[in-house]
Image (cartoon, rainbow, N blue to C red; front, top):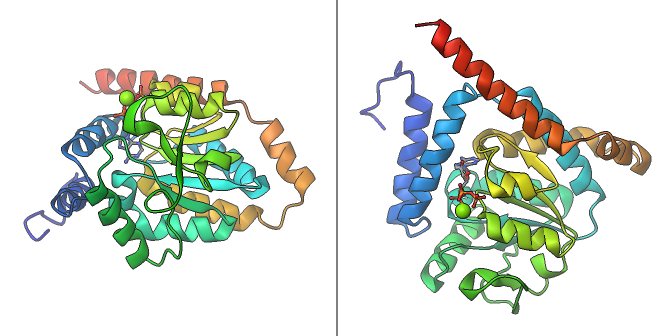
Length: 253
Ligand code: ATP
Ligand code: MG
């Protein structure tokens, strides 16, 4: 941390990398988690490392959806636990959502390490580790295990940095999926009902803010926000933004 100059233009991003390297040492992350983060960074660079309008609109629709949900679940993986543990718990408490650990590379050791991080940060209950698990159809191997009292019965699932196969499987099970993914071209982004093209570092705190703002709205007002939301348009807006950025970059040469 002390080795990164205060005025380094990528300081914020370098500090985040250090957090992830720490998480790797603590078994919270796997090496592929680092690679996934790298892909995200590349997109974040194109978005100016700022939450753009299309993401703000998706965050609003997501917050309304979570407030109306009967059984919302926040699906947690290593990257999320490494970067925004406190914020995930705050959000879960606000919307009465369950936290469930769901890993692409599942191992007892990692499950425990991530659960520990969440408990240390104030989580009371963490599903997906030692409660009753079941399997979701359409998916094979270890990746299809979900908690019987969590994702399996959820009506709304919030996930991030998720693999496309699993997102598609959840959508096929008729769950409303809210995905946070910096890559608007990923299968997850395309399959989700609401795609927040933003960094979890910024998106989760903004969702907390938005939920606090919308929690006094009545059901009709929340429904209206959701009805006026068009996910395809949001993804298209994010792609337009990227093309604009390339043009800007080339003009600056
Ligand atoms: P898919 O399986 O959906 O086609 P993928 O295989 O390209 O996607 P995965 O490695 O499965 O990607 O998932 C990681 C995704 O998370 C990537 O699209 C990456 O851009 C995104 N990502 C990485 N870091 C962050 C972050 N901090 N915030 C939000 N999204 C991120
Ligand atoms: Mg994938």
